[in-house]
Length: 214
Ligand code: IMP
Image 1 (spheres, helix red, strand yellow):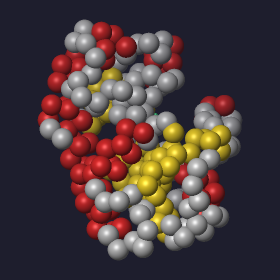
Image 2: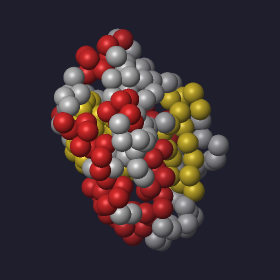
Image 3: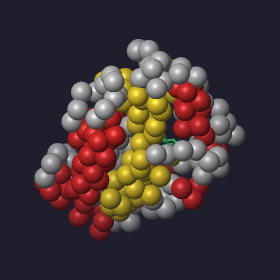
Image 4: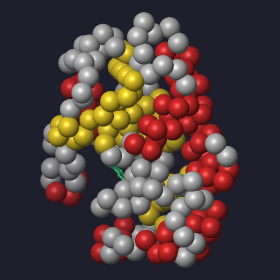
């Protein structure tokens, strides 16, 4: 992957405003994903069967797509989807599987691929559910870790970046379904403003310089 993934013009446009600013550039992400891929390739080199990378829909899809290529060994991919909850709804910790795995993971080396670990409630639930299926091993790789917001301690064996308590969008992460396809990761400066107008970042991200460049 090259520096052209950094999404040049978009970054400049948004940084000059006040709505969001680049937290981690696409080229920084690409470099870290390559590093994680190397570590995981070494870890799973002697696995009796290909590891199964499990993506949690939808936020982890871009990370998973890059990571599975960076790992570069025979591997399988499967997906789960869970109901989302909002901390403000009083539903914290209530997680439900709305799409389960297609394959059986008993006896397999399983790598749960998460976009971000925040309170840790979602990951705790997922690890329990997957652990009950008796995999040979179960590890988590999270692109982002908001460690300061953790409510429940949960193992995160591999992480891309530890980030502060800011709301981020881009590289798979959304706000109300938008902005997943922005190549860089942005910190939203004024979440209340974005909540009031979820289209706030459409013009800065997509309007002036055209769509994000891959
Ligand atoms: P947890 O259960 O609190 O750890 O929440 C994890 C989930 O919350 C992630 O998979 C995301 O869907 C969502 N989330 C937490 N922080 C952010 C953020 O900054 N941007 C977008 N989604 C987030």
